[in-house]
Image 1: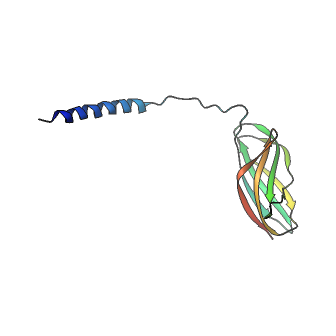
Image 2: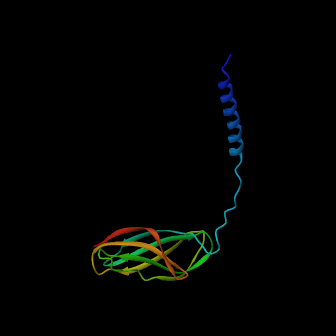
Amino acid sequence: MRPLWIVGVAVVVAASAVVVVRELGEPDLVPVVAPAGEVTIVGELTIDQGLGDTVLARATISADRELVVPALAVRVRDDTGRGHDFPQRTDIALGTTPTEVTFERAFDQPGTYRYSLAYRLDRDWVDLPPWQSVTIR
């Protein structure tokens, strides 16, 4: 014969297991709706040094919906923090299919530069991480 406390523990464990299985059985579905004002934009940026001092930046960018980005730029900083941004592009149409946008500029000083892709929505600029480095020769 088993002691009464072992039977009591077994009953509590079994009842708890039934409650846990019942609770984990089917989760409640919660609709996820992005607020109308927020948008998700993702991009990939590569920089290639062309002939001479010309540098080409190539961005592949998409969004979670159709929209027109008022401005798109490649922000560039030297070791001192001084800006050497590529000329920005305006009114770029984006959607869920990736779009390629190219930028070109000359660098008159060799060195190591940090760069990132940035877009403007409303009045704010948003940098898409990460900041990357390139050495211009």
